[in-house]
Amino acid sequence: TAIFAFSDPGQIKSFLTNYYNLIKSFYNINKLKINSDKTNLLLTHQPKLKEHFKNFFFMAENDKIKPKKVIKILGTYIKNDLKMDSEIGKLTGQLHNRINEIRTLTKFTDFKTRLKFLNLCIPIGMKN
Image (tube, helix red, strand yellow):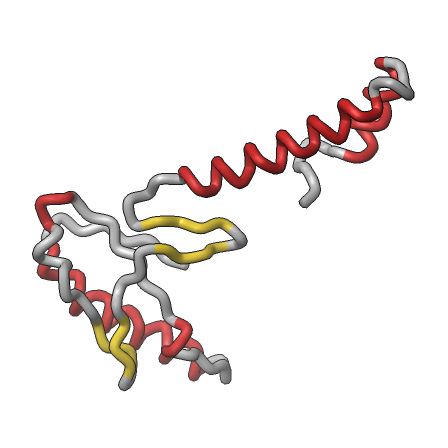
């Protein structure tokens, strides 16, 4: 995963092609293979540049890489408009589910027991 920013949108295509070739050379030197079919591109830009990027692509070997509207990085979906609505909705759904599961325990336990249970089962990082 790499992030680049440009003030001139005309530089992007040549830069991405050169960057891909550099990465490919690095992989070859270290006896690794890069799969150009799995190369993803997410472009975020100002609305005024929408027409400039309408048919944007760059070449990675013999493959034409077109920008995607959504990509998945480490289990998180990132949209090209950088809105996190679906991720927030997914997280709130999981949290509401856990809260309801905890509420079912209230008639069988007291506060201290529930607190111990929560500290054991749901650490700060929250399990999936």
